[in-house]
Image (tube, rainbow over all chains, first blue to last red; front, side, top):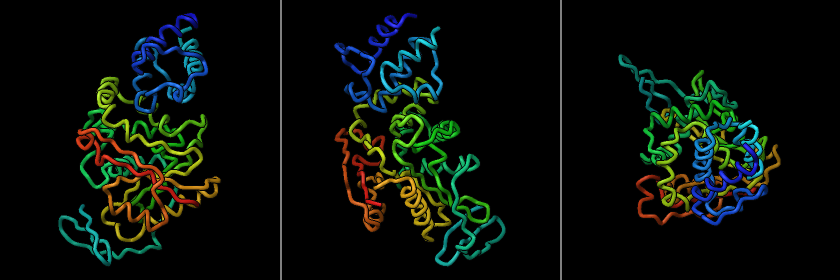
Length: 80
Length: 242
């Protein structure tokens, strides 16, 4: 899957999970930049990403999800 | 076996006889927890979350029985992630004649491989271990609990989760475990210690105040259902300098 496809799909997930239909993602964006992205909503976001992309994160990978860019990079790797 | 504490010793009551054994502090061993202690650590976390009530906040939030919550806690602890309240490496235990009788958790916030907050490490553990259906059940209660989500300061040492077996209370064992953590905090370069206390837990509140803690931040949920799920509607983040 191409990076821009991943970004498009991820954007849809983020807009639904964090209840913001106008949200625009960029690589540097992290939890501090998105309203309601906290430790509780983070769990559901992870679950939705796994479900929508048909993948399962390793715990080590979850702890490396620093920002949108790292999420996309890990997804690119897993979807090869 | 039933153990009942007394003013002068530990009474071990078996089905057939009562054996009174004097507590001997020289027999107490204070040591870092290992994976062999995981069952006691799970008990420590659950009892600490109850905070002298019958409510286990996270279990209620995700609609898990206590038994299931314990099982998932152990799975999370077995991942051996450092730097949060669900890390075996965060715990120190007191062992008496081969039996673990008390435990206390503590860690330096942000001191982990990924410099992540302990809240996110814990979140990732829950996301990794819990079934999706329970995560969704939790999400439906987000508005109830969002205002009591604690923000801890990076590089501050955190105290969390303590428990002493009933038969061994009254011997100041927890003070020894606290001192072990304070020493470790100092060695790690921490300048302050933080601890979360339920506002309604007056005994814990006074104990912390006696040892120099003051309230730094207050987190209150005004949602009418908060006490259906959590032991208190207000959490105090207390701190003191090292």
